[in-house]
Length: 173
Image (cartoon, rainbow, N blue to C red; front, side, top):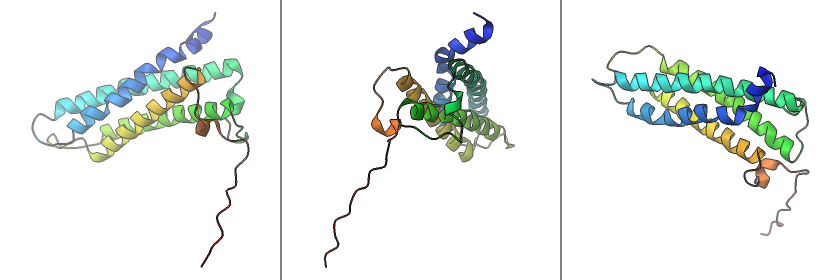
């Protein structure tokens, strides 16, 4: 087994670090909203969790891409492909969630480093991006668990083969 195959096979292990860091970042971001003395340790905690989560997300997305490439699944992600019902649709949701996790992590990390005075809080944009990043990471982990067959996937995530048309009742005066 070469090192790329070994790295790709560790995707399910690597996913835990960025998901947990993104989720835990919400709590120090809430604590860092107040201003005043003693706020800098919360900044440090937020930045530490942000960096660990972002680096973990880069490693996880890289291993996921290698894993999908090794299995021949990358053609199902493309924007030109037609969304099919079933697992290809769920795989596409999982891949888009991974990309969103990476982008939201970078945006959150950037907002954690905006210029501020020593007595100011971390800011509402950083908090909102941390919440979005945590939700995207947990949603991506959830769809990954469904892809691994840990539990049955709900029908709304599998897509439908044809849209159903519901007739409205006739209008009466």
